[in-house]
Length: 352
Image 1 (cartoon, rainbow, N blue to C red):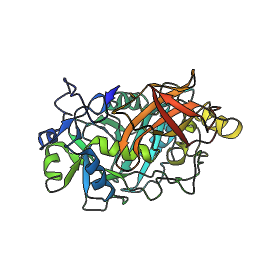
Image 2: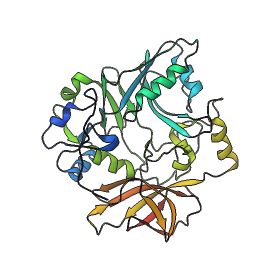
Image 3: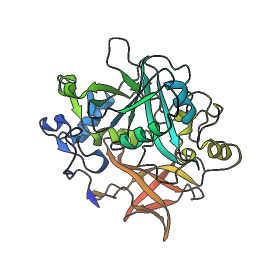
């Protein structure tokens, strides 16, 4: 277990992605996947409130940034990812997945085009692998792929608007809306993230400090708590080597069901038309009577039987300790679960 309000700095972060904003007053560096940026600036619960009020910005400069240029870029990306991208206009945003041949989630692309270049942000540390795979798929097409993480940074802000000409380019998060010809495996009406506003702004890395000069800063603990309560899956957290998109309700924003052939499409279609995902995402209310929270990755138990794994954990400023977990599909929805001695009640995300 770890203290829910403690963190450990991770040494060895490459200088290109270790944020200059860690020099801001009160900054405490995150660890694990979120090393290199601030977990908080001294008051993570207040930082959550500022985000919900639209008054803060989050340093996400540890995220990877990949560019694709050339006249064939959109039709090519359309052909190898899960999303409809042909005809995407300048400054329009999409979310797409790269799947394995067996349909497991391999990469998650936050994608926006500026009319000449397609910009993709991805999870920290994933840009080299994504750029390498994309480069291997170019064949004779007129596209060029580059990992520009060392030159470009990302800021997260609570805005639901696409960027406009004259503004910095931004990817607008569509979650939890249904995008295009797709399906929901969780609720449509009454989704807790309805009306959610979030986007990722692209900033030249040398201008990062200037871009946040007069704005309140919130850390990743704050943004992660809001992500968890929005039931929003995150690559490497709600996914492992066998995750399919249906298990975490990712079809709603990232998968077009009738767009033509792409790697992994057979699994998407087969499970959607004929089957049920073997696991399902649940939201958890954790017992907050103790001082510690379970570790992400801890086994989820129903009695003496392991039924899943804790994928995310956070402390929300209103809901208290919360989490997301992947559990076996047939786990009874009224079971009280236990994680490292902490009891947890389920809220169904993906229906069994």
